[in-house]
Length: 283
Image (cartoon, rainbow, N blue to C red; front, side, top):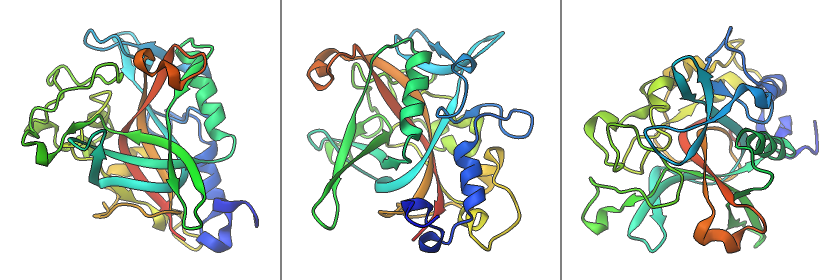
């Protein structure tokens, strides 16, 4: 499809049908992971706004007989900037985050935010975007999907990372302060482990998996499966500008509060909390 940017097969040598299947995927618990959803495509009746361990933050979740269980959401887009393999400084530089700045596909982000607005029962839902400057000097905005900030190594305290108030992040019950214990160092061991927390910290391991061979124009007949993602080869580098990626995250809300000047009418804002990244195609 010439002229469709990241869907340009000649530019990316990508298998268009496989990529479109991933973009159009909604939820298929019979044939794939029952905890992964595409918020741009599912029905809003599938998810509820759940709370965990006494936190006031609301998290997109499945309602089960035993209570709400976090949903793993995903979005596909072009990478604007990536600091997942190596964290980047945050705020005044005394904290760090792992994050990816993603340019979502046309229309997909709007549908996803509309769905989440229904799930969280918000007529207006704020979301922060962050900009980068392209090589031609043009400023472009993208979604920031990130971990919660942790003290940087230079601060001298990287093992007792405390949550910033109001960020909408909920650690697991075993680490209420957000500290990175040895048991939490690899949330990517399985999808179930990945969603054990609403948000992981920058001291936790966030995987970047390489699925380019599954989406190559002349690649394998094998079909990408979410429930097999952790068996893919891991990349030991950050992604580069223009690469196509799928990002796993949890979606949670927090009161706008001190950020009220950033949003026109929203009283709740959305956190997209990074779980993992899958590289789909490179230019």
